[in-house]
Structure formats: C-alpha cells, structure tokens
Length: 218
Image (tube, rainbow, N blue to C red):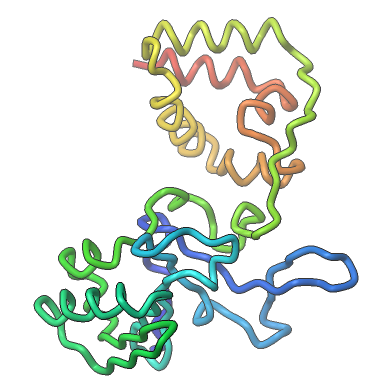
C-alpha cells in the first residue's frame, strides 16, 4: 500500500502540489489529470526560514514509501542529520553546498523525538492540503462590507462574556463545535465564499443565532 502524508492532515500542515499558470498569472493546484496525487504532498518544516513558496522550503515528502527530508541549508541539514541518527535509522544522507537530503523510514514520522527535531508546522493543521490558503498568492478579502454590524457587535459581546478578554484565542473552539453540529467545516465554507474570514462568512450568511447558541451551550 502506497504511503502518503494524508494521515498527518489535522496534526501538521500538509500542502498539496501546485503550479503557476503563466496566462492567468496565478497559482493553482494540480490534479490527477496531471498525474499528481497525495504522494506529491509536502509537510513544510520550521527548521529554516519561511519562504513564499512552500516547496522551496525545508520539507518532508514521501516517495517509494520512504520519508524524504529536504533541508534548504547544508549547515542546518548536517545538524538535523546528526540529531536524527540518535533517534531513528537513516536510510540515506546527501549534502551539497546548498542543501541536504535525508531519507528515513515512514514509521520514523510517528516518533515524537523525530518530529521535535524536524519541527513541522502545526499552525494551519486544520487547513486542507488543497485549500487556496496554501497557495503562495492567496490573499484574504479585506474589502467585505459588513451587513449586520449590530449582530456582530452582540456576538463579540457574547464571546467576551463567555471567554473574557481573551475570547479570540477561544473562538476556534466555537468553530469546531459548529462543524460538529452541522457536519460541515466553516473554515472551508468561508474560503469557498470568496476567501472570506470566518467572522465575515458568519455575517454574510447571518449565522449569528446559530453561533450564539453554540457559545451559550454548557
């Protein structure tokens, strides 16, 4: 059975393969029509600085049922290699003046010590691999015109009453409860509606009553 990074979706950020459309001047996700699938996904790593293009960054990909660790810096790659040797088997290691490539078993990715060394992104773990938010040129729509300002103000007051001043750090729990109650994913629905923020999507669809009910649940 072919192994992919699918099992890590929801735990770490996983990115589906994309390309740049020269005519439209924008990025798009490649599909099976191009011979691209889950085996082409990558898991970006935080061991080197963030770059605009996820696939230029340090990352993990799976090929021939092996985990291929690409480090976009040879010095960092050498350090990662030495640290990994202590906690898992190394299948192959190559280093050049610009990069380092380390091959380990896929089962090693279940080792917490390995993941602590690799430092995959956890932020964005709930974003699906082929979400537009993973494209290099993704931009959140900021010119949305609020339709129900009074209801939004009431919602924020309800959140503050429930969670206090730090309500923003707890609002994700509300969205998760909404997803469970409705069998949908409000994050995805917001994106499909024009890459709106979730609060703007709530306003656009007038979901204030439903969200308020969820907040007030014991």
